[in-house]
Length: 446
Ligand SMILES: Cc1cc2nc3c(=O)[nH]c(=O)nc-3n(C[C@H](O)[C@H](O)[C@H](O)COP(=O)(O)OP(=O)(O)OC[C@H]3O[C@@H](n4cnc5c(N)ncnc54)[C@H](O)[C@@H]3O)c2cc1C
Image (cartoon, rainbow, N blue to C red; front, side, top):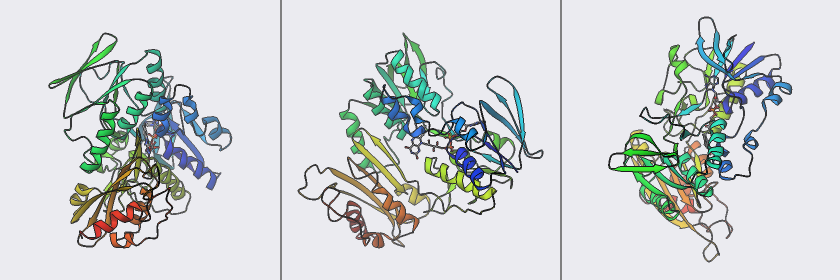
């Protein structure tokens, strides 16, 4: 069997390795447009922050190892430009400009997502950069050093933008953030967003929410950003405005698209063509709370879905449950985490939700070093079901959110969750775990 994979990162290489492990007779061909495969994009903000750390350290497994040890036909510098469904063939062009074509029995589209770059004047200037590939990361890191960058504007206020604030600050760069939407972090409950806002202000970040960018123009060695009623000057600009699924090729050949133009797949990762699978950031998923399609581009799903595709083409039927949107990131001294739905998402999904916020402590009463933990929890009034939780704090947030994810997967009510036997010792939390306190309070509102 010829198994062709477009894209050689999380989803693509997970599928390639597993397919070859499960059935060594399969001819696995991976076509990757860059020269990098299997690297940790998630580690880039932290790596860029440290001038001493080599960016190659983010590569989990080198291309040679996949080729020599795993016997995968991995071709880097190969960009696929078209899929021929009738002829079961992909075609494309190499970095050197040569055309290529490969026939497939099963095709896996694992093309990921790409940064949204607004179609406005000046976004093509050399000082304007997005952070997606390892190549992008290397470019930003060397640009900061070589140009001795002192000021940067970050466009966008999502998690990559916030992680990069800390990165720039560690490199001694003064940061301004700007975005068109008026609300600082609209997906987070206001009381929790305020905690992050205060942290950024304390670190000296200028935050401008509600300013649509009109254009960027050169100014000395740097650039000038013009918004309505606001002008910002900087040595460089990071565009972290969000990402969009790389689904154009799928669209061009008539595969069904889903939310946000991601490639629509079933629970077995199959597209609307029975011989073509898609997964990772380019494809949609089912949400375990709503049971509806969603598009939440995160790393675990990409890796897991890559495995599932390998299973499904080698004869083991793997059906994925779905995602809870569990995510976590660090912004300066704060850990920020969420799993499931926020209040607005719960309303949009047709629930009758109620929310409650609590402020508790990260350690037991009287234990030194305790810091506040802020929790917002959402439940359905009709059924009492837990729908989602958000948390912000300096410690004890990142891993604590995982118990919420497990509760969501098991469709627990808030009352059931409030009765779970969670661990306690003074250095790690109060005797009533912060999540139990949040659940106990929310039960009273249902
Ligand atoms: C800075 C940053 C930080 C992140 N932090 C986190 C985090 O903390 N936690 C988390 O869960 N997720 C995080 N993510 C998201 C995570 O990296 C992605 O969810 C994950 O990489 C998706 O894997 P993928 O294989 O679907 O796509 P990708 O990793 O994007 O890989 C797709 C590959 O396909 C290739 N490709 C695309 N089109 C073609 C084509 N036409 N021909 C050939 N090759 C092609 C691309 O070059 C790329 O190598 C972060 C992402 C970034 C950029």
